Image (cartoon, rainbow, N blue to C red; front, top):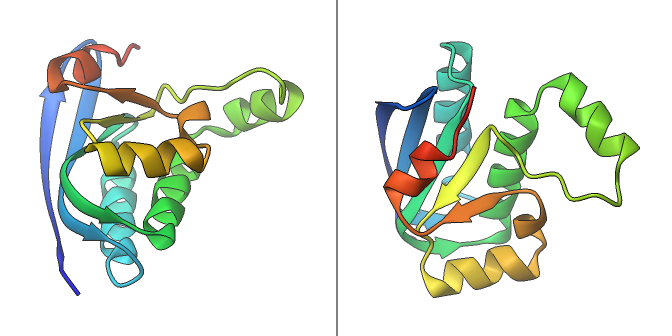
Length: 133
């Protein structure tokens, strides 16, 4: 099984955005590696996270679970209440976004319903500029 390489960068747009550049395979053996890094970043003050999927080759159900956990971690309790009250309206996270998945990864995100709550961008600049205070 292939490893997951994670590098991070910080970009200052309208708000500070922490970018997690993922390379390799996000599956059961590597999901905690990503979750631990995002949790630590969140504890250190990161409120806006961008997952760069441009070099991610494999996304399994465990990888989807990791993305869902990141969504839950970064969604403030007040927003969770809004989601519960407006289930019929789509909620797009202003805190977690995705950029540059390959067609296979995009397909997986689409058929599993992740696109209902996560915005996906085709280029880094548009993704970073989409975060607002």
